[in-house]
Image (cartoon, rainbow, N blue to C red; front, side, top):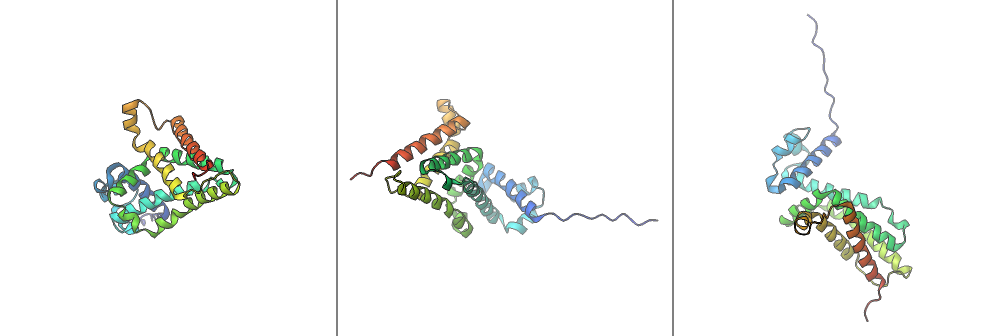
Length: 217
């Protein structure tokens, strides 16, 4: 009687396993919220097991923290690819605002995750040093645009980079979080690409006009 055939299982790529878990967990947390999402459900939708979730992330809190960190990191990475330093200040600002609106419209899960984390008093992000470090560059980028504009005499106001970032993010998130109610009330699709770009350009124009105006005496 011959020997049984030897079968070997190819070891899974840890990076791919972790990426799959993050993708599935992002979907589940965005859909069901923190309390509605169950580790069992995430494991069932993934390509691996519940045990691997605990192996890579420790527990549900660790998984949700990783999901948030990953979501923000994707935003920051996309912003870093814009090469805004090569553009005139006003054009750089408009490009960043338009990119911000388009990104959030294309990734509505981030708005839902942020909303969930706010109901939890940002407990997961407060304890994440990686999150704090990852989000500093965008403020520096806007600060460079403002400094460039003032140096060229294009921008006359001393403005806060953080304030501008918060304003463009808030308005971009509004397009996502209020899309259903605005459509039901006014019949306007806030997520239509043309509407997204128009809203972004309007905000950029207002920001630029304000920055170009002299400060009141």
